[in-house]
Image 1 (spheres, rainbow, N blue to C red):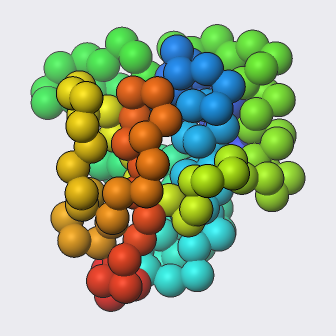
Image 2: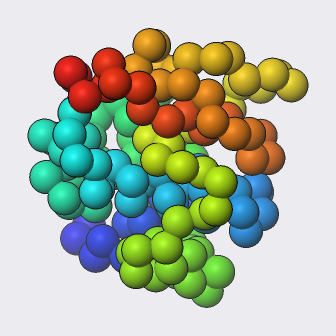
Length: 146
């Protein structure tokens, strides 16, 4: 399917953070757009300023994959049905807005525990803030060598 950037972002927001409330959804949208506008490192090189390339980069968002570990992933962007709130947050992020306090976060994940580890995905990201069930991470200087 040939989704627009807006449609892809709205679907990803719903899939990755639909149950996290407005701030959780804005945080996920902010991470995507931080990657799109990254000034260096992997996301600048791979994404080249493209929302589509950032969202569809292999191994980045579980929701962008139809299969996980060899099995069908029913919670993927193709099965989402975004509503007005998802489109509104996508528009908000695409207009250059970012969630206050999120910094330059480039990663998030749900640790399925009460604590967030200090670094993620390795030494290239350092813990910034927890919003809902997700931990968010800013890039370290090491990220720019990726």
